Length: 443
Ligand code: PMP
Image (cartoon, rainbow, N blue to C red; front, side, top):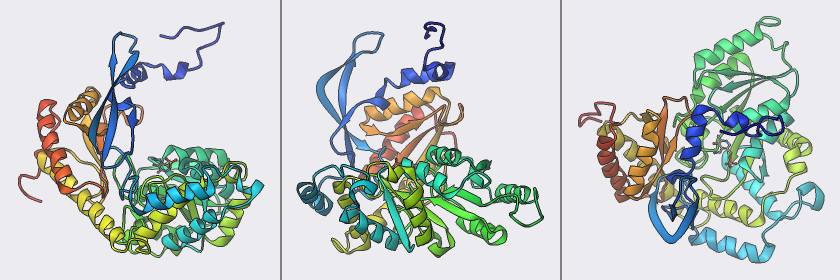
């Protein structure tokens, strides 16, 4: 345990509670193994050895290549070959690596203008703006959209970047039960009834914030349900499509595409460029007047570095492949493969007797381990079979809701997924995590 120094509590005192101390031990095992190379279909882990109880590691100079079920590489654009890599390589030579200033200082690079035009068109909104980080897109946008006197109703499982952005805005924040339309309506009624009946007068604005796909649960927003309430209660709607853009819908255009909803019905479509596009950064797409307001008032882009040119080029190239403008046919094939892979692995895991969370079409597939002690066991056993998975426990989930997550990619083929299923079959028996009776040969 850490001792107080000079009469003050140690800086990381709050971090040092019982369960987190255990987690710190976890930080030293396979999850935190350094990797090298491309986080694509495979991921290469650097081998290391520990010789003492202080867990000081030495690299052995050898590497282990594992099947990568742990990266958000939905459409396989994390690869460093193919048309994207060619375009990016040329871009580095032409533009260098850094944008070397915020846009407000030395101007906007032509690639950023082009990305914003194409992203807006892709998601079906009149305008868009890019940010250099997905996290900062949320953290910077909320304070520019809402302020003191406004109310944010936030899904209880919304990402930390949404919660931080919401807090920075100064608005009142209330959360509603995850994806629970009844609870959202109850919270709306409660909020509205605090003033004149059926008006928003107690609040300058009400903004409802949800995600398209939730990365810990694999659940999909009940968009039709939320939109029905929007018609009735006239709030503003913010949808974070970090995990759904590119990964959902017949044309990869996210939840609107998936549900056949007109994007005009959603006020703010936010997304990250990290996951489906193999790049970095985030975007907000909305009516032009909202984007103009965001540009002129959010600190993240006014005072923060704009995205690197090569990152912008990666976004452009992958976007153009998805739409079919570049490498015709390839985008369509990637979209079909992610849809197939997501359903195939999910169904296979259910058949084995795993408790699988989330929506049938979600490329994030969580299986429940429940017991915290099974976290390391599952990860180690999978790693022995040369498969990398994400395992999640307290404090990211409640203590007894530990889970493992498979992130499916269109870079995986059917043999890869069969390998995962065979490994899960063995490991599930060894550490006893086949909690359900399975689908008994049914669908
Ligand atoms: N929103 C959601 C829903 C996320 O899951 C994440 C990160 N996984 C972010 C925003 C932040 O994006 P980035 O990692 O690109 O900064």
